[in-house]
Image (cartoon, rainbow, N blue to C red; front, side, top):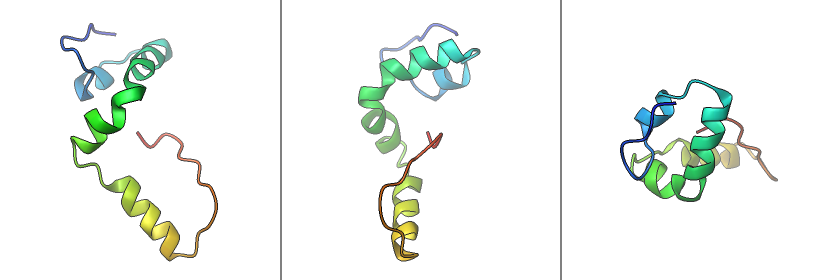
Length: 69
């Protein structure tokens, strides 16, 4: 993986990943601030829209979000 040139990871760091170990390392360090740093900063709307569609279709109970970000 290319070294991160900035304090906080971003899309360029995610796109530079080359191995599963690189992915684990990046996201382990990013997990605690991902929602604030990336999702909110990018106006990432899909999770909320998906939840609304699920509820409108009568969906109930827990949902496992796999590989959505």
